[in-house]
Every structure is written in C-alpha cells, then in structure tokens.
Amino acid sequence: MKTYLDCISCFVRQGLDSARLVSDDEQIHEQVVRQVLRLAVDLDMSQTPPAMGQKIHRLIRELVGNDDPYRDLKKQHNRFALELYDLLEPTVHSTEDPLETAVRLAIAGNIIDLGVKTSISDSDIHKTINDSLTAPFDEAMVEQLRSDTECAQNILYLADNAGEIVFDRLLIEQLPTEKVTVVVKGKPIINDATMDDAEFVGLTKIVEVIDNGSDAPGTILETCSQSFRDRFEAADLVIAKGQGNYETLSDSDKNIFFILKAKCPVIAEHIGCEIGDMILCHNPSVQVNQRKDEYYAKR
Amino acid sequence: MKTYLDCISCFVRQGLDSARLVSDDEQIHEQVVRQVLRLAVDLDMSQTPPAMGQKIHRLIRELVGNDDPYRDLKKQHNRFALELYDLLEPTVHSTEDPLETAVRLAIAGNIIDLGVKTSISDSDIHKTINDSLTAPFDEAMVEQLRSDTECAQNILYLADNAGEIVFDRLLIEQLPTEKVTVVVKGKPIINDATMDDAEFVGLTKIVEVIDNGSDAPGTILETCSQSFRDRFEAADLVIAKGQGNYETLSDSDKNIFFILKAKCPVIAEHIGCEIGDMILCHNPSVQVNQRKDEYYAKR
Image 1 (cartoon, helix red, strand yellow):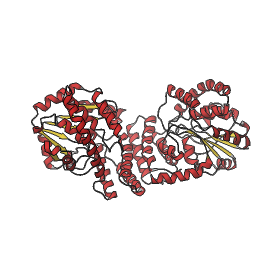
Image 2: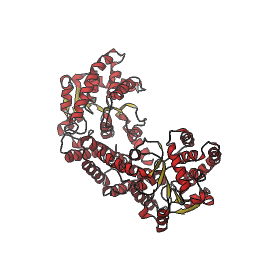
Image 3: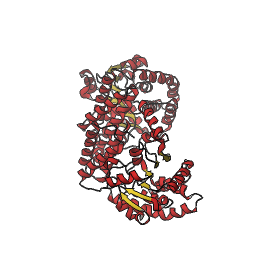
Image 4: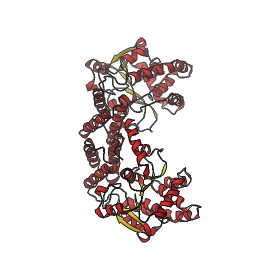
C-alpha cells in the first residue's frame, strides 16, 4: 500500500505523540516535529507508510539517546497480557470453535498499539475482549484459514506488538505448531515485539521464533535480513498481524492472511471496511486492493 | 496565543482538506501539502496559528487560480442562515432575557465554520441551535457584557464567518446599534465574512460595517489597514467572534469579550474548558492565559 496524502498529517502527529511519550524535553519534541516535516517535504509517496515510521523512530531514538525508549512499556504490556492469558486460555478451549475464538482474541490483542494510541486502560482492554468475541466477523474466512493451515507445510506468523503477542500465542496454540515459525522485529521499533518479548511471554518454548533483522514497524522486505527473506520466500502460508504488516505486504503476491483491527480511515478505505472493524482477510484480495487504490486516487 | 506543536499536524490536515474542497486536482492537493510542510519546517512558533492559516490559504488561492474559492459556499451558508433568521428572530424576543438568548445563538452560529469542518448538515445545525439554548453557560458573563455595552461609547464587533454573521445579526440587534461597528475581513479568506456577505445578510442596513483590510483568518493587527487599526485603538469595547479572533487577540490588553465554540483541544486547554463548550469570556483573563501557556509548555 502506498502512502496517501492523508497519512502525512498523521506522521507529524504520531512523531509528536511518540516524542512526548519518551521524553519530557520540549526542545526534543520540537526537533522531532521539524525533522518529520523535513522528511515529509520530499517524501516518496510510492513507499509504504511504515517506511516513514521507520525513519521517524530512528530519529526519535537518536535525539532521545535511547535505543529502546519503549522498553518499560513493552514489559508492562507483556505482564498485563500474561495475566489475561490465564483467563483467556480456558475461554478458547471452552468454545465451540477454538480457532475462531483465538482469531477473535488475536484481533482484540491488536488494540494494544502505542503506535496509534498513546495510552490504554484496563477497562478499554476488557471491553475490547468482550466485544471481539461477539462482533460481526467474516466466519467463512476462518474456514479458509483452517483449511490453508492444514494444507501448508511452512507457516510464517508475523507478529506485531509486545503484549499483543500473548494474544497471538492463544492463536498459535490452535495452529499446527510444528509447522509454524513466529517472526519478531530485528531491532526495537516503537512497541513492536522483539526476541526479548517472545521469550518473556513463553512463545519460544512452544514454537520456533526468528527475527526479521529490521527496525521497520511492518515488514519492508528490502530492510530485512537475507535469512528472513529466504524464509519468507520459502513459506507457503503467511499470517500477518496488525496494520503495519498490512500496509507493507498488501501488494505482495504471497499467500497471506491479514489479521488486524482497522484503526485508521485510510486503511479502512483501502480494505473496504469501517474504522474499528475486525479484519481477517486473505491476500488474493490483491486485485481488489489495486482497484481500491485507483478508486482512492480519484477521491 | 502562540502556535503549539499540536497545531502543526492540523495545518497539514486543514491544508489538504481545503485543497480537496476547492479543487478535484490530485496534483494540486499534493502541491498544497508539500508547500505547507515547507512553510512549517521553519515556522516561527511565537506567531499565532492564523498567521500560518493566512499563508496556507494564499497558497491555495494561487495554486487553484481563484481569488475566492469559497464564494459559492459562503452564499449557500448566508442563504441557509437567513432562512433560520426568520425562525430565530421571534425566539430571541419571546425569551426572558433576549441578550442571553442572542449570545447563545451567536455561539450556535459559530458551528458554521469550514475552516474546522468541511461539511455541515441541516440536522447538525438544528441540533446545535437547540443545544445552545439550554447548554451550561457563564450567565454572570452575560451580565458583564450587558453592563459593559451600556457603558461603552465605541463598540467593535469582529465578525467571523459567512452564514454565522446572520446569527451575529441577532446579537447585534440586542446591542445599542448606534454605538456598534461590525468588522469583516478585507479580502476573501476561507469562508470568513467580507463586505459582500454583510450586505447580503442585511447587516449594512442596521449598523456601520467596515473591513479590516486583511486576509488573515483572525485579527492580526500588523496585517490590517491603518484605518482599521485606528478604529481598534479607539474602541472601548471589542466583541470578537470565533476561534481565529481568540487565537490572534487573546494576548491583547484591550477590553475584549470573546464569543466562540471551543472546537480544538489546544484552544480548549488554553481557555481552560472542554472541547465543544460554549464560551463567552472576557479578556482580563489575559493573566490566566499566560499561566496556562506556562502550564501547557510543561505538559
């Protein structure tokens, strides 16, 4: 997915929000905003939005002088989500269709995203969990996911954020784990999950976990390690969590299921859904997306 | 009021919204966004936000090749508001305190602002009118306005938008009109009222109307004509409508009553109110505002 003009004001706002989250220094906030503006003036709009996110957060880490300013928040989210895991794991097993319930909960976990929202509350998360278990949802797509995971030999699960990966674990446990490899980011980027998080939440004990070598908030293949690219090439099924992975892989011709909550109007329009919708969609929607791109350009 | 870092993403978004409103040409939309970014990179944050608005809309008018791209919309809003006038004028007279009712309706009229919102609906306006007649409101401030307008010899009423000036007319009719001069913008800027609008809605028949010589979406004295500045200096009471006039005159030491609906979080925080609140406030809050500025800087 390319960058839309609508994304640019969001880059500026997110840059400021992130700077405030990781530093109390007003001068740093202003430096971040002005540098984001400078980057945006000559922005290549054919790039995906996370390419800009990657640049913005490199800048923030450099200005703040901290290579992982979200470290403590990621830990908090992991701990909080692990407490929920103990409640939710029996829920998955007690339902008629554990796979569907686990997909729904994986989407609920996608609310824990500091890239979009700077704060979350306990009550927000409990409400999201309850809503996600009953909200309208493309159940036929769950059947397709079930069938594809049964046939596939080599499944890559591209994780999104810390905390959220605990919810991903609920879903991964419903998949044929011997065929699944979970992918985390290669370096700290916002609150995206890295190997530390995968270990902390126990994922590494139940499934192979690798990192993609990149610090992009999504999966920009050119910025990933060769070893990850080889694994991506070899996979016959990819499950990609969150908006960042959707934005960076929606034009891929791989067999990809995207799992996310549509949080921004540009992505909702690109997918053809409403903001807040729970999305499990499959990639042969590539052609649909291309038509949407044309539609969007004419808006 | 200075420009806050929070304003900058809003400049970019408003530039894009305005470009889309006045042109279907995607290339112009992109040119506007990139030029706004260029202007913002070196922005003097001690300027008021409307100083940037003035630059952005000069740019849009130049790129679109139209010196008044909001002309038709302003006419629509004037006509629509005049239909409402016939309903609202008897309402003002039938209430216990016509001045308070007229102030409330003048604030309701402040919803008609394309600078903040790109579309309005009939039902939105009727709801705003009904809400404005009953919403919590600083009634003691109405008494101060009543007393000050009785004592004043020379009242300037700084108008805001087309359409809205019909609602202003309801209030102006409750003031000692022989002492009132209404001020409109000197040149077209967004949907702000100019002399054409004042004539169209019949204001020029009931009160003196002058223009300020400027194309800023507010009252930036340095960009106004000398004749307006002399009148401003000579006035012993100023009534200033809308956010743009608040942003540009909140630091003035003149005797000013601001009448507005607080539409953005930065202004709501500056005033010390909630977004959506109906505001009638007096300028000796200058000191309060300065304290707020300090508070805001530390956020």
